[in-house]
Length: 112
Length: 107
Image (cartoon, rainbow over all chains, first blue to last red; front, side, top):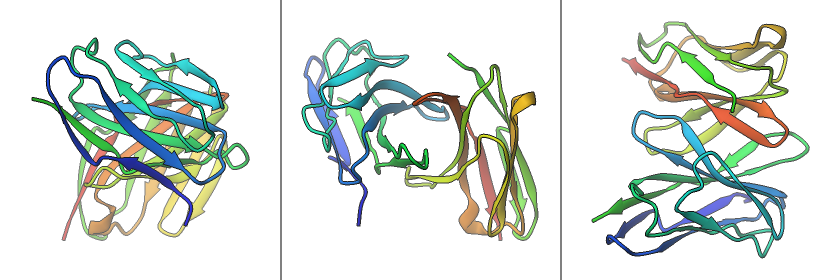
């Protein structure tokens, strides 16, 4: 079955550490996205990529970095510069024909 | 960016009741979607509906693009409908999300 796989499901980070969240899709979608969700809030866009080797900052890109070396993969690194990284992170891809979003099951990141 | 306002923020229904959720946009959008987030965080796409009306079982959605709003109708609600409903809209490939309507359906 086609879909998006995010890993890990839960992640604990110590202060000052960088961590990388994985997002893999086998849907052959060109566009991929990273969103952050805080409790009781909507989704806020961190970064998006419309094509391999290209990505754009979203509304809250500070303290995050991404890469898009392969169509299937769009990893997100939460750097030590992100002051409040505890949140639920969602990866998505967009079908350019139907305009339907497919989301992964998310990664819950907690700073300890 | 585009501001997205959803109402009501919270809704509690008895099983079998109907409801209407609303989404207003601060600017024109040419892409609009509705999503359901289950209690475990998984987001499912319900409708892609930049204009007009669509129906899927007990759910239907209507978007009036010229007035920058969209409505999601849930009929004969079931406990499995519980969760948070989000709308998202934008232009091109970038979508802006509302803060959601949290729906609880009680037996």
